[in-house]
Image (cartoon, rainbow, N blue to C red; front, side):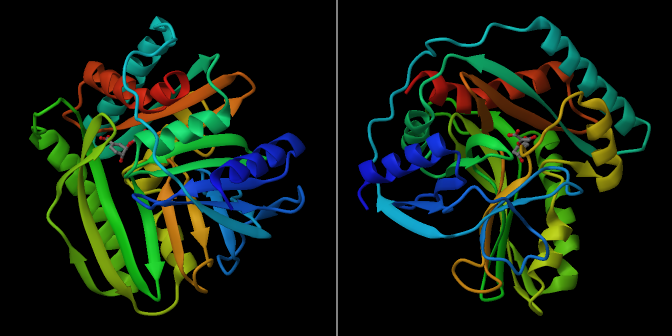
Length: 352
Ligand SMILES: C=C(O[C@@H]1C=C(C(=O)O)C=C[C@H]1O)C(=O)O
């Protein structure tokens, strides 16, 4: 199918409110689409299902599953990646800023009291008057070639889009790969990132946690040195983890990993309760996960963490952003980090 017809098919599904997803894996020349034939809602139950999963942050809530009635793929020629100023950046919101500064200060206090080691705190930003969803999706494809880019629609969740740098887990014939991604530094032309102990510690906590979680399920667990990876106008620290599953325990592995401390915290339950109680809004599918389940082979999956994402509600976009807090965090810089992260989606919304 050519790209134009691919977009027309998506447009038609959107108009008729029938579930579908368009996605492109990191650096892949193909853009794929999965389309349901009707508006029926399916939910993930035991991970033996086949389809495309869209799971919320709160693992006590149901994950949506797209039934793969029709799978299409198309090659995509990257257009120009225009840079420049946003045409309509959302106005500065001092109330939202104060709320976030207070939230981060509460997080730091809880860490200093010894109840937590790390917690990821987030917010969402309203932006109005953006380009059409399919146009924005094409901008994501052009701008963020190394990200997993998607546009998801389901009547239950609404319309979501994103360009995430983070893999939750990928399993092919029992070979497992994942990554520990944390620590953020703003990209500046020609300058390499400079990491402090704060970012190294933040990322190290995620690595140790993932290795501990994976050890019971795997043999030959390997870890690469951390290095800087670019995600749009940001750098992150990333190390890769590989292992071989002892037996086919896909569901158990996914349940053990989600949510990782890259998006929740340590200890998991204390961090999760703190987030649900104190953030003051519902993350919904932000920091959940999404991707293929059982599509290449039974018990295979290719799942990504839903970061650098947004929800589109009529002419309004809700952009979701957060950052990891440790004892060394400073509320003002954490605020700045969420502003920098929000530009990943805002530039695509207003600057196509
Ligand atoms: C929570 C987000 O990103 C996560 C937090 C990071 C950090 O605190 O430095 C970096 C990458 C992600 O693991 C987000 O983008 O909203």
